[in-house]
Length: 207
Image (cartoon, rainbow, N blue to C red; front, side):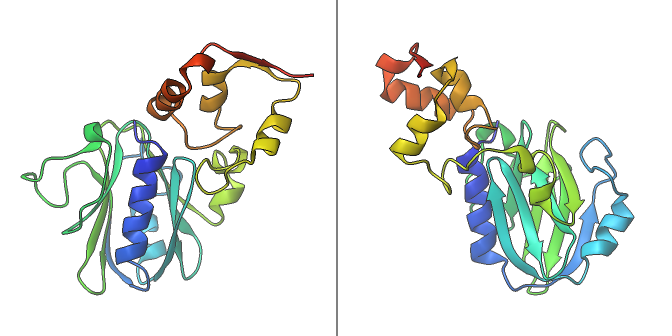
């Protein structure tokens, strides 16, 4: 499933290509398994004509900050991916839709065309993603419950040691705990543990 690197790559692609541009066309999928808490028509009306100010991320969650709320928010689930037409965006292999498929893809859940003609789509082949429209994404679960972002809010060695006080847990479950450090999933945790393989079964118990 997409983890921090893929979501951060999507965020950077949006920052590099979409900021300061106005949304002139919107297509929201009629899929209430992915589109949460709002009808497609209300979603479309709420963001049409708005300008993209920034792309924000915490952990595996991404949201578009517009010139006024509410803001589109994306949980990537098992196979969510951002596509920008004509722009290469790194994505999780199993998320990818074929270049030969129609545009926007039949898997598109959120599509916008910007005032310069650039087109952006969020796709989800497996329908485990969540797309919501939120006044303040950081105040709503799951973002509000996340621990420090592994890339943007790295712990110092002292902070890491202090945070482990009174914990008794093996290292991999700790790394996967999004309330402890957000953004790390299985493949990143496995890579970290490969690099420090002697700690793989180490249990933290600090007093």
